[in-house]
Image 1 (spheres, helix red, strand yellow):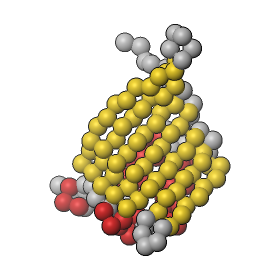
Image 2 (cartoon, one colour; image 1 turned 90 degrees about the horizontal axis):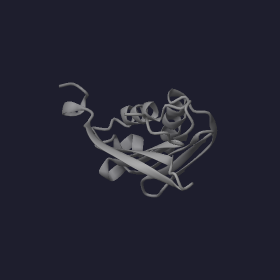
Image 3 (cartoon, rainbow, N blue to C red; image 1 turned 90 degrees about the vertical axis):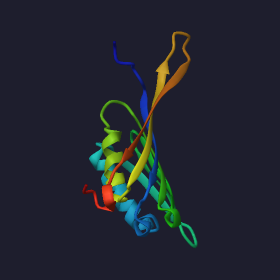
Image 4 (cartoon, rainbow, N blue to C red; image 1 turned 30 degrees about the vertical axis):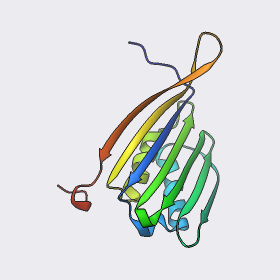
Length: 143
């Protein structure tokens, strides 16, 4: 079976059991995302993060390949992550793994969307693959 050609990869991640202190800290999330872009071989162009009152952060890192974004709910230990890249240079799955590790997520539901699959009639479609991961046992990464 041949590999499907795609313009981009879009990862939509539901991260649970995350460290609430990290999820409430816009500066720390910015640091994590900027490093995640490096880990994922992406070229950072800009970033913006906003801390809500009383809690929560929304933010985005614009990369040459597209973006990394987040919305957090520290009181629930939950983060909604979005990593989208175009081209062949970036490694978005490495960025996702890095963010989940730094957020100390215990669980992740991940959807990988292959976007920009060209059809014969000059239209485009996408394909979705979804999986779940238990990331840390007993809350510390050890069995």
